[in-house]
Length: 505
Picture (cartoon, rainbow, N blue to C red):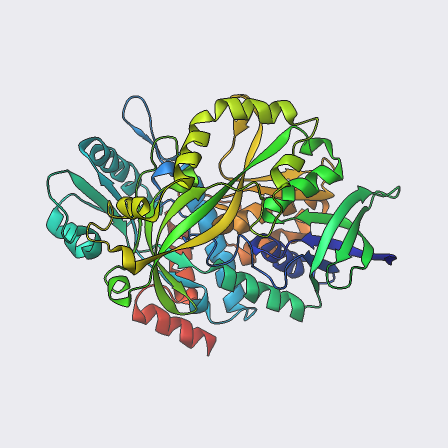
């Protein structure tokens, strides 16, 4: 049974952090827009955005070693780190605007200041980290970063990691106190609460079955209510496909040429979570190491303090896993059904090129708990098996496409595929996704609403003061942004938090 057709201005597919961010921005820029959201699960932020399905790191390249590449001459390329840091600053400014405008409340429920650290072992890695520190610490975006290879100083910084550690191998770490832990699940739910108050139509338990173009140039969605079994047709001038791993299948249904020759490879993650409060209390930082040879960048090992439901937790991982599903709640046929005539050669080429990755994933899947504990003991030498449990994290789908580097190249990061006329856009890929959601959604708005951009510029600058400018090249604006966002979001010292409370009063 199919109900009659319903028309709207904007349809957002998926109730995750990306759709929440885009919907909130569009409502601020054009309050009269009619927006409809479809989510197949029972509530927002339950897949990749859920707090247990990602690392919760405010990715600003403060600790992630894979964002700084060592060149053949030994110098460090920090260009990617700069880009990611500036993009995260945009997210912080937008969140600050939302709190100042009283559109969301209690920022401590989704963001907390937490030191970000890089930790390495071995002489070559210590040399790399020292060179990385020198390159970053000269940049105003990374002001305040410290380096140490002194075991006594490291014991002060990371007692849980240094206790009972044999001192034979060179070790070093960098630390920057302005890092953050972000509960993207909580933030997503806050944003959808706001959108609901603005008469955005939220539809849960609705699965998008098909997307096609009408003769009038609108997009028509066939959507099934999973509770009643009734299908409906909805049309919109603009559609955003933000369904996490499920976006690829929906992009393929659109038939737009920009979506051709693109495939996806699913990688699942597992985390060890500490169940001993005494151990949890001994660690207060996000500490990132170096990825093993052959591991995808999302598998960089890290020991994270997390704050979930105002409870302090300790997680280690991720360990890579494999399932053909594109979502945790997906189908075992997801990978097979994503292979189409236009991307078959692309996928086959990737299969040949990524044999080391396949081997790595197989090895990871076959690990016993004790073998995972041995990897944890590289971080916590005296870790006890009974103190740690295994949890399944979110599903990631890495983009595969043809690039100048060759056919079937595996991409890391977040990508937006947009139709030539800007009427539809799809988000693909993985980390640092959620942390850079504001920047990514600004790009969607720029590409998909070009006629409105001139009239929206002033409001965008109000929401994100650094929009269109480089914070690295404008230290005064950088300091102003840092001070303002820290005060509003309650980050930093007690005086900073008191200032936010006074502002809200």
